[in-house]
Length: 140
Image (tube, rainbow, N blue to C red):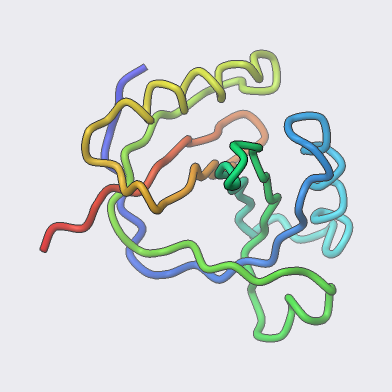
């Protein structure tokens, strides 16, 4: 796996469902997200995670808000994925090797330029490919 820089050009508004546990509750959280608009194949899907103060991973399944007010309509939490540069690794066939996602984040977390106030971001570009990303510190 080769680390790359992925740039998100503009903020992405998403609605989220928090998993009941990590990693066990992730599938259920995504099922709920997909149930809101099951026919839509253009909506981008994400996973967002970071540890809480006790070190417990809080995981949120997320889907891009395509129309203003969807977050409220679906009774979800709102989140904004910030524009900027992210250090990233792509994983192919992640469903047959889900442990590769954790391995990718362990490698990405070693990068010296990550934003320590950031989060781990999974961008599910297809049912076979996921890009694991962590935001880099902005260059001022």
